Each structure stands twice: as structure tokens, then as C-alpha cells.
Length: 244
Length: 162
Image 1 (tube, rainbow over the protein chains, first blue to last red):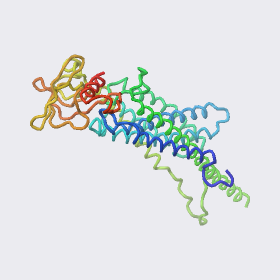
Image 2: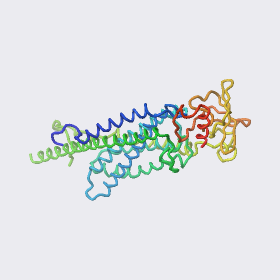
Image 3: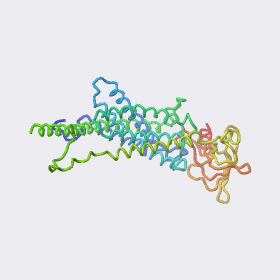
Image 4: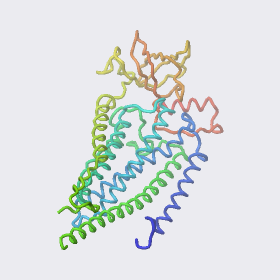
């Protein structure tokens, strides 16, 4: 990274431009080209952000668990895996928050209430709190390897919540509707351009996630390097004192 | 050997106290407490969020006298507004329940749509003070050119009823 200011490379810059174009296309399709729903009217447009947000959060937490498993099982235990896990976890929490906020707005307009303690909302709130806890555990101090070890174990436990959240609407009686696409009946319940806009949102948000993770894990690498440099300086100072 | 990076101090001065990371600790404690609250809510409210109309007075936990949530589809041509209230019939699995709601449900409430009403049964009528519209997982484009208004309403009704 010598001679480089920031965490970007030509590849991430190109990806960033592509993400902006995808999000702009999503905005056009979601707000302009796709029709209103016969029951919900324009409220349906919230879905093009709400569903991709939670989808991206699932991917993020899946990546966190995968990298944590690789870190714990690997021979050399490279901290790069831990940094990707941490970066992915942070961005996952952000996307769950977006999903909760947009879902709450949709709920007010459709259900008539911002929040209910039904199976889907309650399990999603639990998922959010769990990963906020995961991020806090990462900041508790100790060496990088201590951080990596304890957070990897937690990530492998936390990922078990994802199927619970996704299938909560079929396992229990919930106010939240069942999935319109990834449902057990394998029946897609969305009309043409609505389905297209939803998939566009899934792709755009996934690309945004990749872009954010690339930058964040590089920033974490710099933070770790800065921290290690502080340790090197301290060792050198003590050696000087001992030699004096 | 203490290798914590440090600033130069005066000779004889006390060594700086070891910094504790209070904020992450507080967040961990907050997450544990919040998780406890959410799990409690899950066990008390979320597992069985509602009783279906055909279970009222039949299934355990769906007794008519206690306050509960009832789910069913608003029967076609049953909605009536009078004296600031709304009455309608809920239909589910060939069983019906008359509902008296203290107000206008508003929002996307309409006939043929599944809803959840909060309240209790009084003299055979479910007196409700809160209604939540349970949207199905089907999304249908509004298209005035495709069907006329009457057909559209009928189609929406059949789609929503499944």
C-alpha cells in the first residue's frame, strides 16, 4: 500500500462506480418503472430496499462465519481471515439495521403498527443484538489473536440464528408474511417488473456489500498495523532503557 | 515486562493506570440484557402470535373470555361503518366470527384481506380495539387497462384468499 492514500485501488474504484450505477438503476426501477401493488399501492416500493438489506445481512454473517471457521481451522491462522470476518460483521449489522427501519416503516403503512413482537420481528431483533454483541466482543482488548479466537467462536454460534430468522414465518404463526421468492413452495409470488426490481436490488446491495467489505478490511489491516507499530516502538524503548 | 506504549513521565511519578475498555464492556452487557428481553418476548408473545377463527373457544390458549389475537379473512360485503365504529365478519376454515372494532381501521384494511384483531369475545361478538392487516406474500401489479374495476376487486379477493 506504499504511496497510496486511502483504502481504494483501481479495481475497487471501478467496482464503486458500478455500484453507483446499479443503485441508480434500482432507484429508477423501484420508484418509477415498476407499478404499484393492487393492495399496498406505492408502499410496496419499500420492499426493494428492505428485502435486499436482510439478504445482504445474511450473506455478511455467512461470510463472517466462514472466515471465522477458516481462521480457527487453518494451520497458519492468518489474521486476514479475522479482519474480513470483522468487516463483514460490521456491514451485516448495518444492513440488518436498514432492514429493521424500512420494515418498521412498511409495517406502519401496511399492518398499521411500527412494531409487533411476532416471530420474524423478534428473531430479527435478536439477530441484530447478537451481532452488536459480536462487534463489542471484538473491541474488548487483548492481542489480535485473542480477539480473533474469541470472536471466531462467537461468529460460529451466531450464524445458527439465520435459519431461525428465515424460517420463523413457517415455524411459528407470524404477522409477517412468508417469503415471496425463497419459500418452501418454490412459487414466485411477484409480478414481472416487481420481481425484476427486487432481484436488481439483491444484486446491487450484494455488490455494495463487497465494495464496503474490501475497504473496511483494508482499514482494519491499517489499524492492526498501527497498533503493532505502537508495540514495536514500546519494545524498542524498553530495550533502550535496559541498555542504558 | 510491560510493553504497553507509554508517554514519558516524571521520575518517581505513578505509572499510568491500565486502561479498561468500558464502552465495549457496556455494549456486551447491554446486548446480553437486550437479548434476554427479546428471548422473553419471544417465549411470551412470538411463538403463537394469534389464534385462527376456527380455534376460538376450541384450542388451548384461545379461550373467548381472555384477551387474545384472532386471525381470519375479512368476509366480502360484511364491512359496515356506524357510530364511529366498524363491524365485519372474519372468516377462516369455514368458521366465522363477528367483529366490532372501535374506530375506522384505515390503512390498507379492506374486504377479502387477512387481518389480526386484538380483543376479547363478549356475547358472541369479538370486541376489538386494535387491528393489524396481515398482508399475504403475493404482490400483484395495479393495472387499470388489464381489467375493469369490478373484475380487479374480485381477482384481488380470490388472490388474497389463496
